[in-house]
Image (tube, rainbow, N blue to C red; front, top):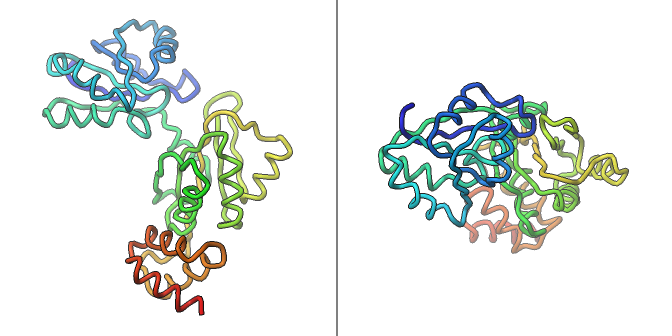
Length: 276
């Protein structure tokens, strides 16, 4: 086996989804770097693989790099996450950068990815899409986030924790009530769920207890097909007028600035004229 870093995708719910190449590589590498050793041991034990494990998190990534630095050039090391494809909203970025900076071999062993699976299940246009990581925690930041999504011409996909789902949908119902949303959870598991509808329709399903609010959710929201990517003052006027009906002038200036990159002063002056 060639020395280097092997970025290996693992199942997101169904163990049968692990590839033959992933099994073979995990069985041959010298060291495995994972998020949670207890979780990874379950998968590795089912595959009959015993290896030295290092636990990696955002807060200890530099320490792990120092630990393996002496082995990096002359060893084969695997990077796995708790589920799915590593590095995507998971630790490992600094490790990959370290290998890249040193000019060492880096390769990928592709496989399951909840983001791609959710996009495929969404039935929304995915010739262009944007991945937005985890949705923000606070109501204010969620409002900014939802505005960004609502004005995008691309399909958006992101993660959201279970205890923020209702808050997200309530805010979305005010900002983009007509938007179609696809929610995926427990992808590839026995209890896999795919829920589609407007924010209000999905909230009604939750209130009727037809959706179990446990675990991690993947949200997919279609882009605005009428959105003109080349911003004009007419486009900005429409955005500002729409947002002024729901937000303060200060918030509107901040939101439109983030979406369009136009100076806050220019937006403020436009908003003042439109308010009259």
